[in-house]
Image (tube, rainbow over all chains, first blue to last red; front, side, top):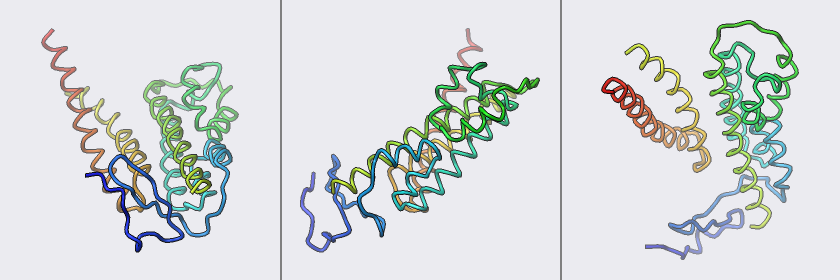
Length: 153
Length: 62
């Protein structure tokens, strides 16, 4: 049964509530949060995965996203023999990579123009790199949602 | 068989990453994320293995 009632003991000043299809769930805010800009949170996440969450005082998640998405991205680039992040050579893959903006800019600058000869499979590496880019969209949406919750209570 | 194992070795790590990130969007706390991620990973891996084995069987039959 859908429960829309919460006890007075659950209502704390540092807690906001989210209405899910299942129940009214308390959503605890990290300590030290104040009004945060959702657009800035998204832009920071685009530039560096996890930076938006760091800005929103969610340090644990920030480190988690930074490590997991950057490692996946770099492993993908290494598997592809450092040839896949190139707007000229692979423009369609580049669309997916571009959602991980900062890392893509670094690799585009470092390896984009390199004439690297390698037998490494481009598709396999690009799959990993594209996943890291596309998963960063989810992280951006999460940062946006969390900042909006803080702002609008 | 070797090709199947190679395909699984390709997809299993990325399944784990996707599962963990997806769990982290819905949960808070390292233990909760790990638990949710491993649960998602189990479902996801079964799905991927089923798909790959099914594909190989279908190719072998036709």
